[in-house]
Length: 231
Image (tube, rainbow, N blue to C red; front, side, top):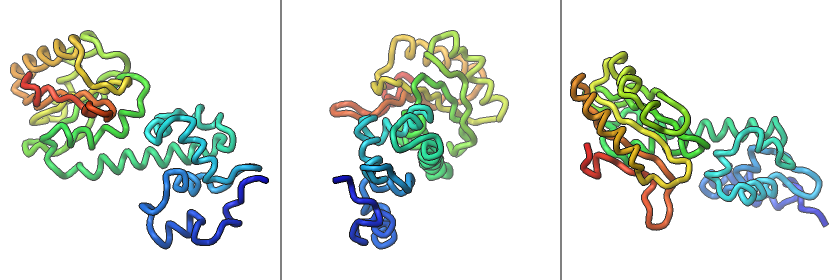
């Protein structure tokens, strides 16, 4: 016997009705995904497919990192529904950024809140500069390079150019480790020291260099060179 279709479930168990009555917090991840997918396939309703997606990719975070091609190849999803999922994850990432836009960004935890959700989805390293005003509020975020971080790609000239161009008071250098482990490499340390020296010459405050990873047992989700006393 196949799975019940959504409309065959008791009304209080249908995801849309459940959300309307109790809010999104009352729904499981698979139920929320089911609302986005809307329809299922023979033998699996939309919630079942949502559950299968989380199992297939390993976690909600990993699902959010999946490419449109990977989503579209999943049985019961296809390109159109894959686009809907990608759009939903994209909005969630933008919302996380908007929530901290007006507050001073003076801790690595706030930087993680600003960019962590988005950058955890990337399959390669992205080097970005977070530009701040004199009250350490967000001006803009500029991507400097995409790919493995090395001392050529992370040249002080390329990193400091956005700060000078946009008349920033300070900046935070941010990059991600796709492995999830934010521990700094020797190259990360050398780049940080070079940028610190160059920023002093231009009289721009190099506030921090934050490496973003993924939270795990006995491991933080980020590493801050400022907290480590390097900057």
